[in-house]
Image (tube, rainbow, N blue to C red; front, side):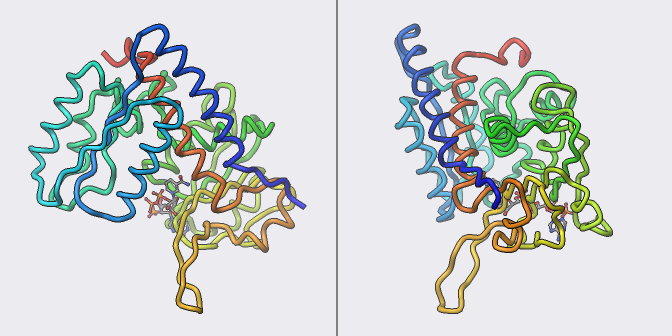
Length: 295
Ligand code: NDP
């Protein structure tokens, strides 16, 4: 039986740590850390994510503000909002909920955020810092995966990690983090994607297999070597025969769990870690941890 790595439990501990960090900050500065969230349009999933983020903030004592703009908002309006927040010292962290409506250029918007307030870690400056190993904001999901490995006593150093997926928000930054010459890294990383000719050839050699492809239950026992650690980033809503729906990961849990030494569930695995790491990044922003490098 595999060890079930509970993101719910680890994230709860992280939230408690952030809460005590916030209390110390408030004592010293006389104010709360602040996170501003921008939601453009009325995508129900985005609405839900933003509400969860605000709820998490409230729980640990971070002040959050949700700014809603209509789906018809222009790119200039979005940029103006970000500029105001960049200039406001009470706004420590800025998050623009993605996806944006199609007429707004996501890259332009993300580049507009002050890199010192970029708690999602999507600004090219922070992405570049991650690549060359300088301190900066790390996107919440890869940061969460590394943190959950660390807190579960799983050291990637010297191990072969296969990451299935190469998106800018999950696969690529995670591969970079794990390959870095530092604590929590030092792994040999293979990054797989749709151009990979024989996926199983690579995943079967992995001591740690991370699935971040967005394809429901695509990783089966045919992809996993006995004893591997399996981290499932995927969150996919699938239809059931009775007309309802459920959320599944990218890993076929029932067939992989008996083989793995440790595995994350979906839900309750990487998802809660992503949410917790946003709080951690907001505290970094409030404390100005990366400020000197960002100017
Ligand atoms: P993207 O769609 O942006 O990227 C998916 C990546 O997987 C691409 O690089 C793609 O390759 C690769 N891929 C797709 N199909 C295959 C395949 N059959 N074989 C090999 N590689 C494949 O997704 P994200 O990175 O944004 O998200 C991935 C998953 O993680 C989704 O289910 C998403 O919902 C979930 N997610 C979960 C989070 C959490 O907190 N747990 C946070 C963010 C995302 P190519 O580049 O060639 O197209």
